[in-house]
Length: 322
Ligand code: PEP
Ligand code: MN
Image (cartoon, rainbow, N blue to C red):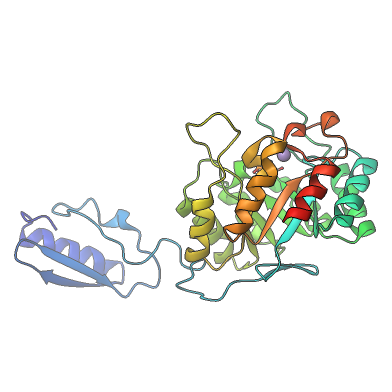
């Protein structure tokens, strides 16, 4: 409380705390009285108290996120997608095109990346493109192709959902559901996806803080689905010389703060193919549990993100180095 707070103001705050079924303890000091709030099972929403007259500052001891925190759950969480396991000793390599273009294209890429050591197949059927004039993906047909190719080559698949209208399709066709950067804050969508019970690849919003990122994951765990793999995919900064900045600080910090596995997406972080390998190596060195990498059989002809897609030769080189 402010040092000018009156006894009545202090009493009012104590009563407000107690009305929320919490305990309030007056801690009188030389200059001011502090009020300890106890008995909370989770983060206390300060909005109910902060506008009371006489309140100076609210200092939280409990973190905003609980279920995702390492404080709450010390062991690393392992997330399984078929036989693939995120968070164990070996990094998981997810590879594939930005967008599914045709069965021929996806099959050629899937066979090759598997041969070169990838564990999972990626590919978008519904693409959340920044411009409405860009290729939007081939939709349901893409999901069907994804299922067929994934079964044929024997690698589980991940694909991005952009709308709750497609929940049933994703339930039927994919092994892991991706929430893209542009939908990290779409809490309605992510909670409905959580309810599918499938493992989720949650990408960080391009302007989301670490706390916002972990709170998005908290929504999923609170919904009863613990199978979340986080993905650092680059954030927006003042720097325009590459598409995004791969935030290795947060990649490392999340491993301290949370028990959930975190992987890196050097392709969307870089925006250009020749930065993908160094960023991939840096991310693994910083403890990433895996990588998701865009690979195309003919990047110059790719319908989306060709400039950052690796061809088979550069993917092979990357796999050898990592
Ligand atoms: C993607 O992985 O295809 C994608 C669109 O990535 P992001 O959501 O990170 O931009
Ligand atoms: Mn892409």
